[in-house]
Figure 1 (cartoon, one colour):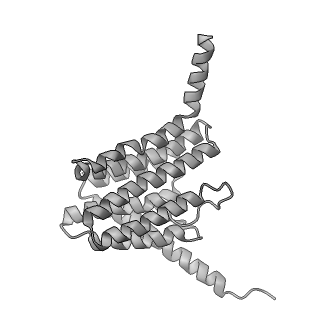
Figure 2 (cartoon, helix red, strand yellow; figure 1 turned 180 degrees about the horizontal axis):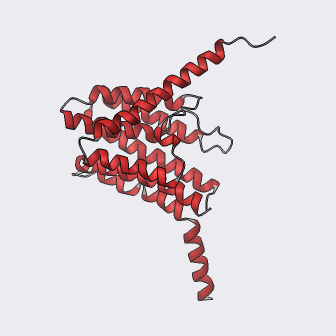
Figure 3 (cartoon, helix red, strand yellow; figure 1 turned 90 degrees about the vertical axis):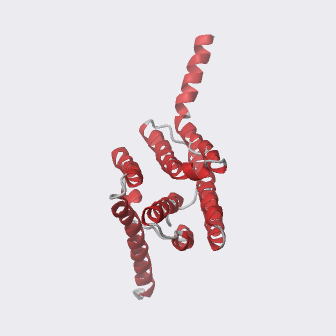
Amino acid sequence: MNSISLKNINHLTYRNLANVASILGVLPLCLLFGSSGDVCLIPLIIYCNVMDDLDGILAAKLKIGSQFGARLDNVCDAVSHSMILMFVGMAFGGICTTAALVAIAVVVLRSVSRLDPNATPGTGSPTNELVRHVFFILLLSEQFSFDGSPYLIVAFVLNAITMALPWKLPFMIRGMTKSAVAIGLVNVALVVAWLVPNALPIIAAAFIGTYLYSLGWALLTHFRSTSTPEPQ
């Protein structure tokens, strides 16, 4: 009896490894609202990005994906990304707080819409793309000693728009990475950007530049398709 119970527990644990990763990606973010929140912010953004990728890798590699797991992942993403954006918006205050609230509203709406099993996947920019932009803006503003607030406002508003777009933005770095190795390298790039100041501008330009290029490509493609007359 004990052997059967232990086997069931091990099987249940194995089947939920990806779900555990999703939940663990959220819990440490409570540190943001402690006395050392400012110190923890950058490491927690990296941690959140790693765990967000890890749950998907585990689900795919171990073949333990499920509709419940996909929905839990969306909920955890909405919570973790909203917490990060709220903390940053409140830290800068003023218009930045308002812009962050707008972005959070779109994050929640996008995440809720994806709970529908019939939702169209792969449209708009992912919510963690905004978190990465915030990550780079914060690091760049610290390295080059400028006020990051205007750039954060632009990032909040622009990403709020692109998260709601019904078109795919195909050339963003994270969106083009499919293998576990490539996804791992994306996360390594974030760590390098944090720890190696000389590499930060190059890595930030690569991520933000491919995002803007993808947006321009999507807009151009859409307007070309709508302006082309249908054949009679």
